[in-house]
Image 1 (tube, rainbow, N blue to C red):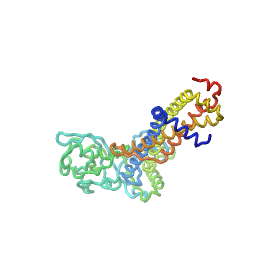
Image 2: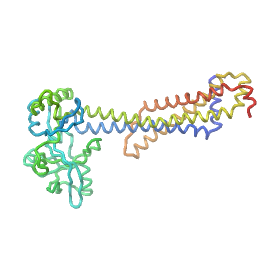
Image 3: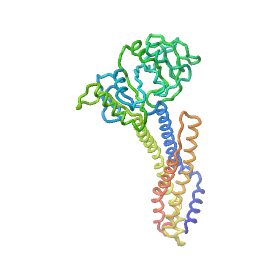
Image 4: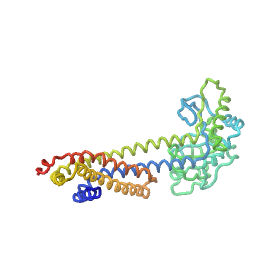
Amino acid sequence: MNFRESFLTALAALFANKLRSLLTMLGIIIGVAAVITMIAIGEGSQQAVMQRIQSLGSNLLFISPGASRGGPGMVVQTGTSQRMRMEDVEAIAEGTASILALVPELSRQAQVKYGNRNWSTRIIGTVPEYEHVRNFSTIQGRYFTHAEEKAASKVAVLGFNVVENLFPSGDPIGKTIRIQGSSFEVIGVLELKGQSGFNNPDDQVVVPLTTAQRRLFGVDFLSQITAQVADAARSDTAFYDIERILRKKHKLRPEQDNDFSIRNQADIIQTFQETQATFTFLLAGIAAVSLLVGGIGIMNIMIVSVTERTREIGIRKAIGARKRDVMSQFLIESVVMSIVGGIMGIIVGVGASILITEYGNMNPVISVNSIIMSFLFASFVGIFFGLYPAWKAAQSNVIDALRYE
């Protein structure tokens, strides 16, 4: 019996028990669909977060108080009493030419009130350059000016989430809100950015740095300094320039660790990508278990099929069928079920991803590699779990098979 005849015989056997064949393929269908959908969701989430991180500015270095363990990009801080102050900003500005702009920031959590509404949000005290360096443009109103920052004016620019919670049905421009008991005039609204996976850039209120330090929190230190590098190729140079300047400014001896940390935006993105890839791989691995369960289901049904068709096997052997002919027939049946189940799983997985895009709050990215990988794995499952039933059928004794009732 040639391959074509074996294939047609296998198809005939499967169509003779349509419902049983469909139920047998269900594990493969669910497994393939789950793998495709999970990888699509993972890659879609990764792309979305990458776009949002990059939308917060480009070629940035983030300088924070507190010693970090490791090199560039490491953010594990050991804690320190050292503070970052405007003197540090001035020293960096004077000591390196690789920095395009420096943005000092003071960040605190506080309650913001308007009328009978209140909202807990992040207050960012900073300078007017924050708008361009961190790419936070206004969609209503304006940013505060250098004159307002120097005069410690009580003006505020609201993030999108803050506007939604304090002014659900009105224009906030010109209204007066209260922060820490002080009245602030709303002069602008920031554009919508979307959750980035770290701090929510839409949930903040931006005020002049001098106002935050003197009128709100009564401090003279900074939470962070954001440095925009003139050219991405000079990021490493800027990193080590800033490190050298701050070590000198803080009078650190050669054997002493840094009492500050510098994070590179590219390193943050790379770390997130690695974490997201691990998470996606984990989800895909969990989904792949369904394929193994489906393979076990195929093996069980094939063993039952061999038992039911024992007399048929005996007749085929009696009229000249060889062991390999019998084995190939049952192995082809197993592989056909896996392949058909894999094709149906691909259709279901792609369809589920499209539905999530259409009606969900995510944007999955369907990967051709995930489709190919899951299909090949499904085919392998069919071969692997079909081998034993096929071997068992081929080893049947002709006399005993013919006597089987």
